[in-house]
Length: 336
Image (tube, rainbow, N blue to C red; front, side, top):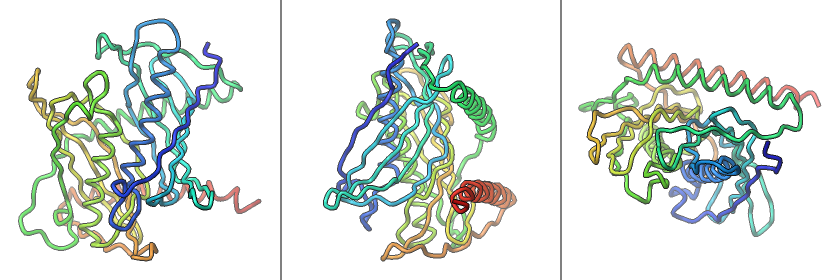
């Protein structure tokens, strides 16, 4: 049993190239920092005992809320801790604090839960066993096991609905799905990859957030920021030399938020040519802001086809479910 505390802290100042034109740091930049911290701590843990060397690969990111915006000049303090291990996976909890170095004021901006699996450096298709951690209380292990089983089931459900393709729309009407849908094509190079030659999860998430932001901005034509990211599922690895297409489309709008579905398709051209495959999928939630940073009403999405109506209702269900969970979480605070 590993007896030391698996904990990591690192920090970085936010630069102009980390932010949008309004000075708000891109959600993708923060997601990339979160993933880097998770990858370091989980890889370090998986190599803590003598055995086959490995690198921890990102398998899933649970729902992540952006609690407060981060701006140029703020310092991001990222802390990561291993909270559960199964036989072949590691759960990492990551918190992000934003610090104003002029005043010393700090505020929580993000909490995220990530799941990693250790892959052998000798054989990338070989998943190794994870050294167990020691829990302070038995209940912590039981709660972790419950979270593990829940995310495992959700990954299977998500993979079943991964056949959708976004097609271009000629002369779309304003505020329709086709009017704001966007795609980005990226050639995977060495700087995007791990020691294995596969894409860093943080690189993929940053590109996904960029596309989601373009969709949101096209729909609102205002400054937009990431409010939350639903679970991001990494279904298959993306190898160096692949051409990836990151596609996004609006699925649902409430009065003050919009949900954007984003998925990543990979076309392998180098070494092992094969058919395009769906590698990653997620839902991003954005909000519209005024020049003063105040929330603005979101133009309602115009749905046309039966598929768009179905996706809208599915998105509405996720929105109401999240809203209900947030109200339950707030109840203990209002009763204090």
